[in-house]
Length: 147
Image (cartoon, rainbow, N blue to C red; front, top):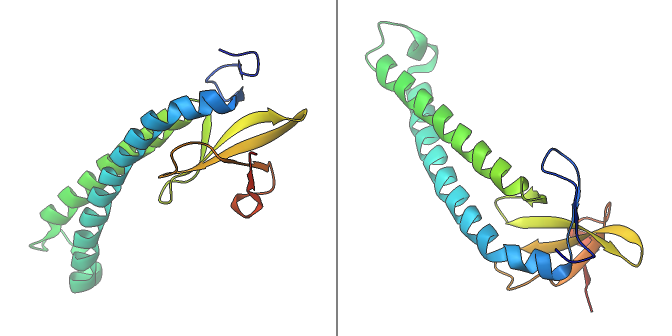
């Protein structure tokens, strides 16, 4: 770990990253975000099926006598399992010390120190390396080049 980096712990404490340390995480982040994409596809697929059943049957989907009730409950359970998997995958990523700002877009921030100030190094999925930073309240619109 470089002098710039300070990891206090994975218990909610802040980890500060150098640019090199943030860049070193990008391949693993790309892989983990791809896994999250697959889980989201599964969640959306199951959700569409349950929504179709709800639209077709209305409130009667909750009746024990409904012929699709068992299948509906099974799908709802599957959806819950997948949502838990997705939440765990996101938590696993954030346990590295990064902040996922938008998992769909792959926006990730890394706490860092720049000119004596706490800032975010900002990376978006698909970018080969961290090229931007912004203030803590600057957001994506406030991204500035590192150079």
